[in-house]
Length: 339
Ligand SMILES: C[S@@+](CC[C@H](N)C(=O)[O-])C[C@H]1O[C@@H](n2cnc3c(N)ncnc32)[C@H](O)[C@@H]1O
Image (cartoon, rainbow, N blue to C red; front, side, top):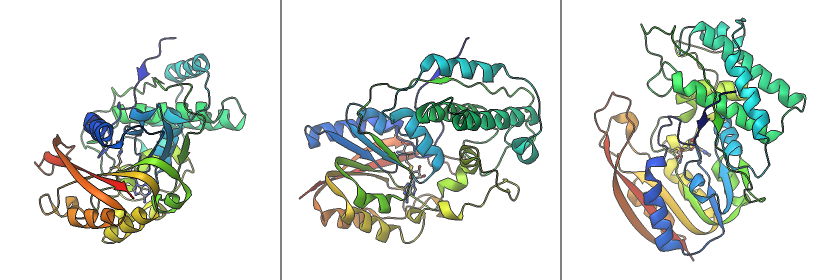
């Protein structure tokens, strides 16, 4: 049973803050003193929450695929590592080709026909194992997250699923699942949510909240529709060249013109001691799609309604899609000490 391992950052995700962790930790350490609880309510991959596994954690994301990944990494539930390694090893060795939802809809697009077959089979089997109670909730989340990470490593994309690359030979694609290096013995009060952050805000109380909303009009449910589709596994009809499912219910207001208003509403609802906000300064610099939805002034005005505000910045290289050559960015952190 030779199964590799994977860490939380072994995934391509637009706007993920893994490379900014030392900056974020430094600002929190120097300004927030000792604290017990940390909430990451636009958690994405969970990279920022992963720096605070010694605290009571709250994570949240509107996408189910991120919710599942957050459970895998942060749920206090125990898991049987040997059992999971043995299941993953069997999945990796599986080589029977069947027709299924994945082959019927995604063959030779982001994945080859045979890899689609394998993804479809494994995804169905993970669901069966859950229904038959062969795995607990965290084990289910670890298996599913391992599958999503394995897909991400080989997907025929530029990192997101708005399109697949044409004229690429997919015959050498191999799906290899790995065991997550997920912590055990986490705080028993850790909680992961899958809802709109503005709805969650009035339900939680925490010492430090970290806010990393989308910056621009690029909806995460569009960029990661296939990851979300496989995670949800409701096998919806898919449309167009990119084979996207209906995503109306997953759209974020933070990607629209109402972002400043929604942000203000969120800030007013939070029951916390410190609010730390990540937002970069692409406004009026990149192309139309990458223009920031909320200005620095709007962020500061909202935060000032709650307490004293400081702004920190650091140069940072961002992920680009290749359409724009703008990769040097200044990443901002806005810290509000609430009154
Ligand atoms: C910039 S990314 C966060 C990246 C994350 N900090 C990381 O390191 O991976 C923004 C995240 O917010 C989520 N999101 C967007 N609108 C949301 C909303 N209204 N409520 C909750 N999550 C939302 C997106 O799905 C996306 O994962």
